Image (cartoon, rainbow, N blue to C red):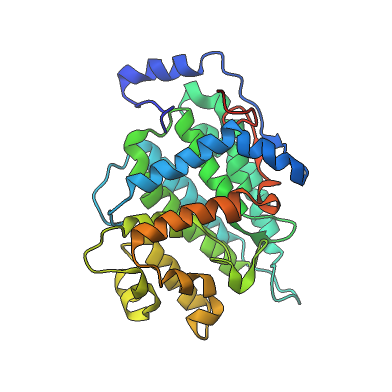
Length: 323
């Protein structure tokens, strides 16, 4: 977020200056084999991405989804884009097919996004940022799941966070938007992804089953635990109580995720979500949050099956961090 600039009239010229002569590029894969993971961990992209995640983590500490926060025109435009993607689900109903999972109508939905997203993103950005649209759009297209396998996982979630990170780096979003990025934009993205998963019966991508934190998401648990740090009443042990979850899921992303799991899965929580059950034994939300940051690095960002699909451009660069 440090690279972003305010959107005031005074700062518009600064944005233009920051981007003057910048060569945007369509992102491409660079991590093609396990030994390439070293390049990723040393890259400017890794440093910028993790810095972005941790900045937002700080921005939402101790805040409810219903807290007051600035909602800029840029944030509203992103929510409108996600609203449109949501409406397309109604316009592309599932098809009758013998397979229970992986409804092929998802491919039709993806084809529509691929066709329309470039113009939608370009139209959303001010004219001075139009050259950045193809680069940013690549991450949006990668963020909804895989059309061939009809699956979705944390790598796709990484792509959406990368999309938002790029919009920050070019100054479309700024430091004043941090809470709204999580509470308005990312929360709306989550709703759309859950609807896609349910409507088209998408498979979890690379799921570890009961030994994974969740079938599809990670960031709402990480940022959601930050929201609950120093809460006067709610402790980690409370999220396994459905009554407490029902009462608080509209205020906290973590409880929202548990509420969704409770709707989707049956049987004892400790059996279908063992890793989360273990998290409920941690003594404080601060320790949960610290642990989830470590786990996110280890289980998502440092796993080849996830990062092999990541694409690098000029904004999230494969180049090593400058020393």
